[in-house]
Each structure stands twice: as C-alpha cells, then as structure tokens.
Length: 383
Image (cartoon, rainbow, N blue to C red; front, side, top):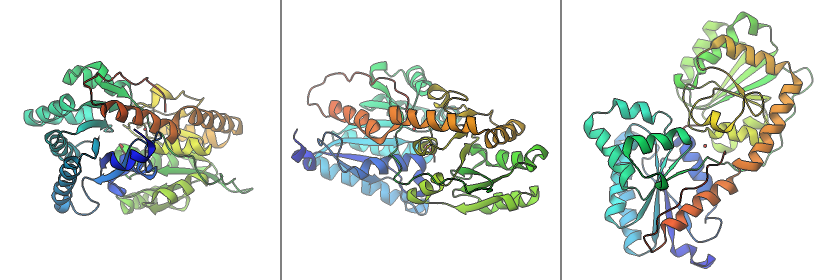
C-alpha cells in the first residue's frame, strides 16, 4: 500500500478521550495526532466510545460509534478497529463495539490498559465473565502492557500465545526544556494523576505530614481531577496545606509543563499498568518515585531508573522523598538513566512502529497467523 493510499485505509482508535479517558485516552490521542502510521499505510482516526459528559449520553456515543464502523466498512475503507479496554463500564461498551466490528467484517485489535482487570474479572457474575472471555477470544489480536497480563489472558481465557503481544507505552518527546530549581527554593515534588485512593494520594499527604518530613525543605504540586476539595481538606487537617498546591485537572500540554517544572515525580499507587506520567517524567529527565506495581518492575530498576516505595507504606514514602531531595547524586543518576531509557524504549515513534506492525498484519487479506511482538520495555489505563 502506498503512502497516498492511507486516506483510503483507516484505523479507528476507539476509547474515551479527554479527562475521562485518562492515560488510555492520552496515548490514543498521541497516536491520532500522527495522522497516519509511521509507514503511511493507514489513516489513524479517533472514535469516541463514551463522551466526556454524563453517562446518560454514553449510549448515544456508543451507537454513533457503531454506525461509523458499519458505514466506513461498507465503503471498504476500514481496516482495523483498535479497541482500548479498561474496567467496569468500558467492558460493556467495548464488548458492544467489538461485536459490531465483527458483524461488519472488520479486524479488531483489543488493547488492554486496565490495571485492575484481574480483580474486576473475579468480581463479575458469570455472564460478565463470559462476556470478557468472548471478547478476548474473538478479537483478532490482543495487546497488553506487560507479562503479568499476557500470562493472565492466556491462562484465564485460553487465548493462543501467538495472538497476544506485549507492547509497552510510549510518549512524545517533551517540546519544553526542564526548568531548573531557583537558588534557595524548596525541592519541587509533583503528583500527576486522577485523585483516587488507589493512586496513593492520601498516603502521600500523610507521608509529608510525618515528623521526619516536616523539616525537609520541599513542596508538593498535585495536578489532577477528582475529589480535589476532599484532599485539599485532608492537607489542611494534616497541617501541610502551606506546602501543597492543588491545581485540578490539566490538559496534556499543561500537565507536561508541570513536569518540566518539577524536581521529582511521585506516584505511590496501589495498582497501575505502565503509567504515561512516569514515561513523560523520564522524557524530561525528571527523577521518579513510584511503587513496583503492574508492569513497572518488569521494565524499571530500583535506584537506577526509578526509586521504588511499597504501596501504603507512608514511612517509606517519607524516607524516599527526604533521601531524594537531599541527594544530588541520586537525583542525577535517576535523571540520566531514566532519560536514556526513554530514548531507547519509550519514544512515541517506537510505540507507533510496534502498533503499526500489528495493523499491517491484521490488514493482510490472507489468514496468516500473527506472530507475537517482541517484549520490549517502554504504558490507563489512567494518567
């Protein structure tokens, strides 16, 4: 297929976009911004599956998305529907669209971003489990973020190993230079993500309120939507409101600017996939403190490319923040090795090439089996 044919062959990038899409929506937006895949064979187009407003309107977006799939397929221009899957309502929405795509005769790439999918699956009644099983088994190919989920999909749904690829996330290089900390200014710590308990935001605030952290010269900026006022009130009760700034939700450009102005990123989450925010920090040379959950320990090394803390261990979180803020050598090592790792494995170009290879194989007219992609270290479900 020539580059000029890309406008005639489309891949629909299907997920919620904007704030409700989290990291999943962000990485699909990054991909859609390319316009075409790296080879120019396919046009990459957003397909909204939920809408950013009330859930009451979600069925309208869902029906419209299905109609777009049928319409473009009928014109012979739709090659692949790239379905991005999270937990809860996402399962039912993407299940509807998956079977619509199959009815339209279109290939489906099912891309799992859900950090909590294993526990969610266990909580489902039998019909819900059957739906998930049917989705994974009827998709033409499955993409997961790490070996943890690859093994789970194989063992739980009996999907053939050659039908699953581990493709870690990638992010664009930051267009902005990192902003040095002014002389005499406190160490600038950044939390970037939805304000949820599973992200460890309460643990972080309690850690900064511990006596050993009170004397440390640092401040925290919290960027993210959700229960902002709840956590602002918690900071007040803990006596650290003067050291913590809440900005609310930020779009991609604003969030990346906050990263350039940070001395370290911290994400003490209880579960994750492979968070884009960690990759964005590394792309800027910002050291990262995080928990070894999800695919994180598969690709990062403690005290080399990230500083690990145990989920829920507030004393350890406090110690890690104090240590990093007072150790320029550790800051430099995490910054330099994280940046080098980003350039080796986590660029948007590398991610787009790996995904485009799957599009090309799925779009082949023959019934050839798709070989698994190589496991490469590179990213929510959530930002």
